[in-house]
Length: 488
Image (cartoon, rainbow, N blue to C red; front, side):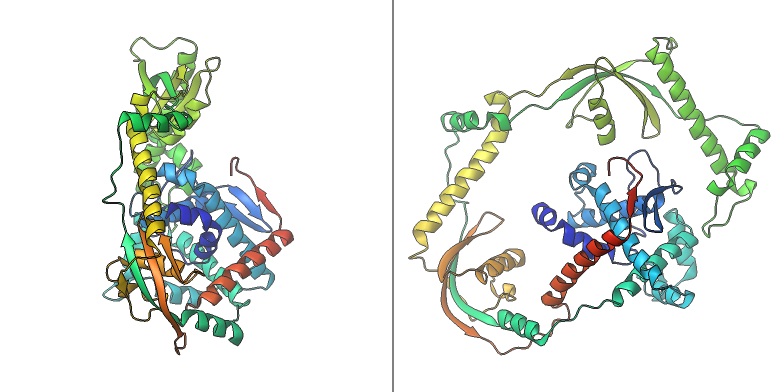
């Protein structure tokens, strides 16, 4: 799945960015030094449309939730980084902004009736089968969103859809005829599945060592960092009324209810004190950092040690990345927040990567060696068997008949049929992603007389993707894009 998504990432993004808001209830994922509450300030400007940090946070969270679902809950920050999820989120928003510029140039807008009709279709706000305003408020509140913010986002997505509807993608009769012909080709085949379960591999040291010697540079130890650090726990102070009132008056816009209205001091008191404590904690951490650099730490401050690497990192990926940029001549890292605690790190030693010994690498080598050897022997068996094998015989099947191959699961059957109907060979074999090989012999072929009534016609999907990509390139030439955040 990873390989497929990386290969088709640009089409995946085109599909995602025209959808309506779907992140409510999915949970939010933070990244970098920003929190979900950082909504002020533009991170980019496209034409006359600004992209805010809050929008970037929400889009990143939405993408993260979608990928996590695809990976069945096994998606994490490291995978997000390898997929460039931050860049994807910004790209998605800048492409949306291009469409919004187009919509504004046509004086398009979304009225309250259109907004309400859309909200009434979103089932996560339903109670007893119908939209419920109280459920609506509660869900938005749990997701730290005001009604105004959410409805602004929904209006924006509806505006994008309205603009795209002005530019419909049509399919000609000839194109439909071609797709009908392709989908109506039916084969009656004889096939046999070969697996590597009964293939035995010599895994002795004598067999493994030559393999290890040829691949030593692929089996390197991790870079690790020896550090000292001090911690600043969260501060919890008592503040007089004047201090609380002063902070509230200076930061009123931070304190709103679920409908986006400013809270009075009494309603915001807990949040005001929380912000004061947050600021006091950061100030204390900075003072501690300066004292640490000057070797003037208080006697009761404990200095701890740790060895950090990619596989041994009790902090987070961002912390490791920042530590990796330190040097012995510039060893101090400014306080970094991890789980409500500020850490100030001092780099004391870097342990570089080096080639593992045979014994150190043996466990990893064994897995790779066995996989490669089994694959090689299975392909050799397939080549020797393809001309004479006898297997199961099917009725006439098309590339949509995966369910008829009952000795294969649906995913593997689909993979096999897609490859089969793309092959030019009457007799051959197809390697599947799960490691199995399927031998096949096409016994007969005929053309069925069925009309394709699939509303998600693949020709339409392909042409839409190509059209959207061309439209974005055209709008990029028309509207200037400025990025105000480094590294994206």
